[in-house]
Image: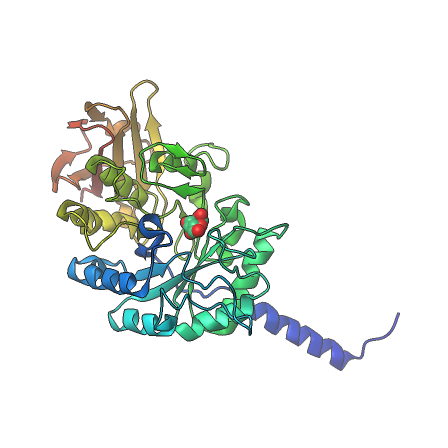
Length: 404
Ligand code: GLA
């Protein structure tokens, strides 16, 4: 065997260590689930810089920005159909004539952070240029545009390995030097909860959501189906499920919100929102916030409900009770300072009485004051069951505070 001189050895080792230290995600981001807005659910390919600016302005006027919705994410279809002669991914000049840097400057000047979508494959799901083979070049461009959040999709990935591919983009972002929330969107196909904790800040757990309670349209699912998948994705054994992989800086993402979109009743929007908060999910609104009903705005900016999602402990809630034949589910979420959130859902297609028997929620031990969060009133304490009439697909949401 050829002898390697010690100097070469230590240089190689040194470089290796530098490389290893470099290969990491930006820490300290997304300590609570990211909140913002994304263009896809309502606008799909019908996007342009005017829409994005109007959305930002509306989110200031309607209180969303100040409630914490700060990431404005331009999803698929912002690009030109082809890369330019240098291989750069450039915006469609008709949709974004001022360019992405100018849009980022506008958003930053209004107190927002700027998000964008691309894809780990050769093309995005809508057929625009993907990032494969251009990771470092694209990350540099995104950094120069002031991007703060990258959603990275999984269409046209061929035989690529998910973990390696997303790690490449993570390293590219790190090398570009601008902190960005890295949002993996590989739809839970390769169990990202098991390996993406040091790759990204959030990862999709399922296929796409659409504005339905529990419908199915090919690849797309209503929010209740997605909710069900959150506790069956690994093995469905008890309250751990995939929730145990989520926490500050690394979140399960059950997809963006459909709150306020046509296919949901008000009750279904309210229940959807409550559950995404119970899941400690990223809250990325997907409605037209320029034209939303006041009652939808009031849902989205309800501080007490948002506090459940944004709780510093960062624990994902889980389904604690689902009595066969009763069409009622009760979920619990542990909060910091010994508090708990409890959410009861009426899955019936008609209104029904729900009785919450606190002593059946065995993880919640001790005496608590109970606050009905949506009704904004006390619901007594947890020594006796709480009974209420609940509309179809609506919820009761409680916050339990330990008695002194
Ligand atoms: C995939 C993603 C969606 C959206 C579309 C855009 O389906 O899961 O959230 O980004 O691509 O084409």
